[in-house]
Length: 260
Image (cartoon, rainbow, N blue to C red; front, side, top):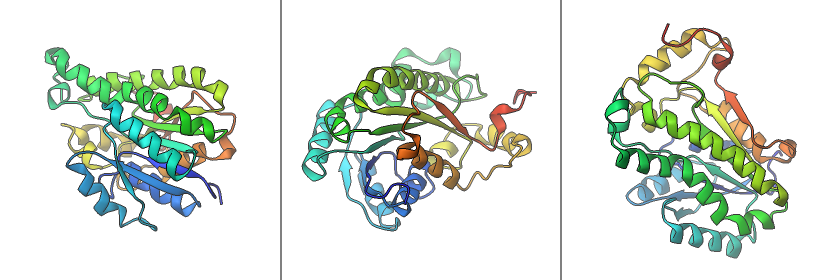
């Protein structure tokens, strides 16, 4: 199987409609052993939804803005596996005043916290888990974005954070390549996750997607995204790094702006 024997750490699983859940499910079906992470009050949600996976994985506590948490997870990975073959960064957050058409009024405090959590955390997690990643002798890090090249309606400062995440991906690919560590990001089309539905005006983007994606798009099924992420985690992508790969039904290649 594609991920037979691989040891993976997957963040961001809160509900069974999340993209991270689909990644974990596809990974297990492809032969991987998986650990999930949760944080704070979300730990109980992650532990509950973990039982819906083919094999119930353990859940480690991880606040990506807390260096002690990252150090503890790194130590647990070394103790349990002696390495980690792949890490999925499926973490993003922007305070509500940074979304929904409030771009010009958003205070720096909200932007700073959202950027740290959504973009800088990819660097923090990658550097903090460097020991188990290096021990794998060819590891892969994959994050999730929403095409940061464009100024999307209502996405505002989260769009800026995603653009930052994509840049962080390229710089990490540069600096971690010497250790055989690949770093890529996947730009998924809109999925009706808990996070997506919380964005004001989500349907404004999603409805247009259904009309314009040449391959069509299912906003209730993230399986295709999970499959691409698992491909990037596998040895079949051994020479792919620094890439932004779209899984969006082909929407990104169409020429008409979403606002027209």
